[in-house]
Image (cartoon, rainbow, N blue to C red):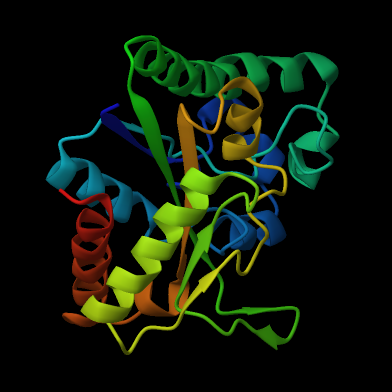
Amino acid sequence: MTDYVLITCEHGGNRIPLPYLHLFKTAQYRALLNSHRGFDPGALIVAQSLATILMAPLVTSTISRLLIDLNRSLGHPHLYSPATRNATADMRRQILDHYYRPYRTKVENLVRRAVAGGSRVVHISCHSFTPELNGKVRNADIGLLYHPARSGEVHLCERWKASLKACAPELKVRRNYPYAGKNDGFTTVLRRSFSPLAYVGIELEINQKHVLRTGQSWMAVRTKIMDSFRIALGV
């Protein structure tokens, strides 16, 4: 069975479309849009770079997660942010139909077609995390999130962690950190539709402290992530 690599980025930007700008008019919400609450800094360029070197399909969004969180399931309390949660039901439904459903459907269709063609899908969902949350410093440079009951995901993360250690021994890599891979997310939803033999879903999490560095440092981290993933895949 051949691998079909798919790269996505659900939180690639902090854009708010014009019809909804009035929901974010306060200084508080403008500040949130430019913070880690509004998007995942660095995640988009990593996704684009991985897709380029692997010649893999890429699906991204630059709509802010504060409009609607593409990595949350329907009914999740954080699907809508406080800014949109109190919008009218019609407006929330419009946001869902214009941004959430098309994104989810596009990715699901790519996975479904690849599986139907006899391939195993390796889906890398690119994210980044704030170095400190609620006064607690996050103790990792890179996190690899997966479901521990799915052997394909376990083995790929083991290989990726090992190759990152070889390529970048200075980086601390942790599995299922700073979040648990089996928590709610797009990969979790896709696991319900596709067997472990057909679908491998990994969330890549990068500490934003690297994104904020100037010069060659951030570029070097991106290169090591890309090189190590190619080694882990065996390509």
